[in-house]
Image (tube, rainbow, N blue to C red; front, top):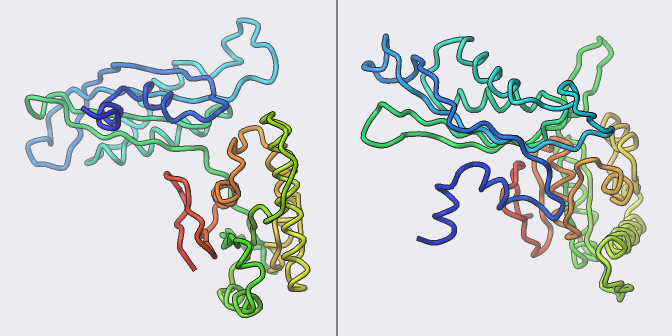
Length: 302
């Protein structure tokens, strides 16, 4: 059995550990929580109860202050069990997938919850356990625009990554024209410049140097077209999105200030993180860059 197959059938806690980043979060879990419930899409599942097993692992951000042995300062196990019970009580469902989604959404509404693994298995439908497993992360609230009548509209930008040949391409203006023609807010991101930069051999300081190098490249793109205004803060990004401005992202401030920010220094991974943070419609790649696995935003090659 390969490690991938072994991990596929491992407990959600093992999967959470295996997929943790360089700065892993704390985790709490609920194992082997068995409830009798009526659920299922088939006729023989209607009007009868069956055993369903829940395994849930929640990754949480550390509490900003000492917990002082106070249960009110943590995400308790009871909140996980209560989330399961609340969704089971809300209505009869046909699909385990629907139930898993709703439980994950309810748990992620807790302030400390950042990522949740939910496995649900039917124990009485055959000789083995039949189930589903999902992984969901805390979704950022999209920026909203308010029209003259007070109606709100969620803004889902297009995030675009340009490699260095793309920045210097002779048809850059035409590419930007096509992006603007979509009518969506456009946020441009760039990679590292093709120039030597200091190597410290120290991950935290190297990360800052790389982020600053990316920002230098953002100014290179800005010099190529007057529409490419460099911005650094979430306030600037939100304002530009609401006013239909095209911008270039300078990543240092958002990345370094984020409580649960990206650990990778790879420019495309940073662009993907920004796209997910802003609930982007899609991430468009100009160049040969590849996207890390597990994207929650559609990715397309220009």
